[in-house]
Image 1 (cartoon, helix red, strand yellow):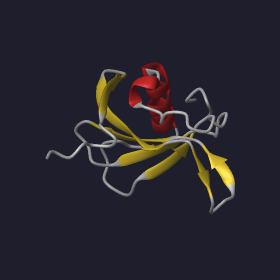
Image 2 (tube, one colour):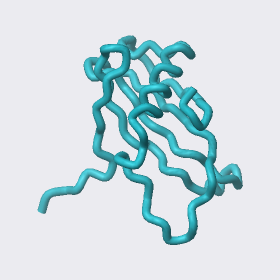
Image 3 (cartoon, rainbow, N blue to C red):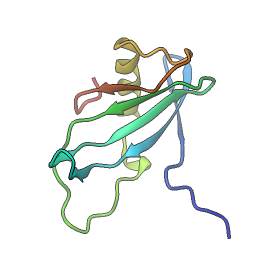
Length: 109
């Protein structure tokens, strides 16, 4: 039986460059910090290896039993703005190194 991939990668173009992104963390309750945490997207250049973890602020907590957030529910404009913000904040997508964590606002800016 084939394995079902939990977080399939999505493609997006930002300023003429191809990027790949996936949901790294869905909005969830964190027992470590005892608070609600927002979603995080893992982003990388299509030809690069270095990822950026783009973290969004916690939004409204979903109702109990609500379906999980799916990539198709995230607006491409939001992802594009978040990638542009990560680059502005100093992420170099084609460089080598550790994953960079970038915190953005709810609009991706």
